[in-house]
Image (cartoon, rainbow, N blue to C red):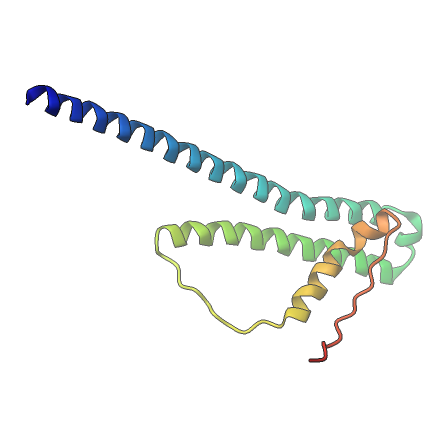
Length: 140
């Protein structure tokens, strides 16, 4: 009887060890995915800001007030975008601690799409690309 009990303890300890290792591996993968995602989310605005700063150094742009305003606006928007990313990380931490409340409000998907296109417009132009946005309503 003692041998059976001892065997059950060893099997239970083995199961608990394997379960803990698998859970730690999954948490490690989640952490790596999070870091990769955040790195990408920060690199995009940094690249856009860098392109806008390079454009501001161009002599043709320096002489054109509208272009100066356009590129400085891009820098400001991308800076705000980075701040939103930081806020998102902080809110995620608060959600984990159950300290945050969800602010449910209606959003207009066209505005979101327009903002995304605007954010990537400078990068597209840098690579001689362009985008055409057609947000017509679908007929049902």
